[in-house]
Length: 395
Image (spheres, helix red, strand yellow):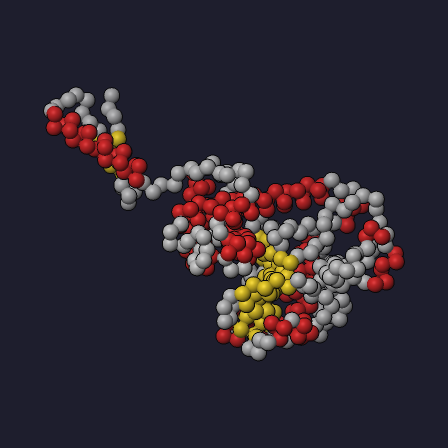
């Protein structure tokens, strides 16, 4: 019986060698032994992705600790937000997103995770693993990439589990409760309000004082807490505990000049104020004399929603708050990594997206000064057509 030996060279060249069925000479045996040795040596030195073990008992916090992220700029919070955005946006060579890579013990999955980790390391490695960090960019690449693979995979699994729990909880509600948790539609007037009407979503408005007397004490907010949450106007007191926690995403102010910074806004609240009042209320925004636009991003486990807003365009500002409030209703439960990001865009970053927004607003003004239902639906359709509003990881 003939034996077939496959020799894989570094450049993925395959050579098949079939020895004779009977010995011809000592030289033949010597040649055959040499080829066998080369085959084994080449396979041992191959850079093919091997299945690596998963530290099932290691939490994300411990992985961050092993990566030395605590000493990195922005700490673990900024790193967690950066890695989660990366997993929801980066596509591998097989056109797959990280949330699609579920089976850790699959060779193709680990190969894709390796690619995702290496590309993240190339782009952000020097930012996180240089300077005084205990884990060094130049010395610990293999260790960093291996830990990043686990970070990306665990983050994705946590997001998927949280999403499934929310969906499962919705199916356990009574018909009356479930009707109150359904996703708002375009035809609901609460999301197509007049331009002067207040946005009533709990994450964007302050509590209404006159509501307090009609609510049970268990539902009243702590008077010492920041006014971030607004309770529903049509409340239905119940003895059962709510299945979903109140949406309280963290607010971040992001700048890129003169250097990239990420500053937490502890009392973050868009409230019922105009765009100009909002800018004046935040010192870092007020100081930006050449500010062209701000970019609102709602980041959740399920999707990222991005809306650029030109400075001075109050109509789009009101549309953005209405639209984000609708999406928070769809999310129902907000995970600990959800956030609202306010990114500053300067006048030297003018692009086609800004010009498109400006033209869209001018067209909307022709329909009237108010944010009518027709204008709302037209804007939503156009924004989705240009594919910069939503980037979903779960379809």
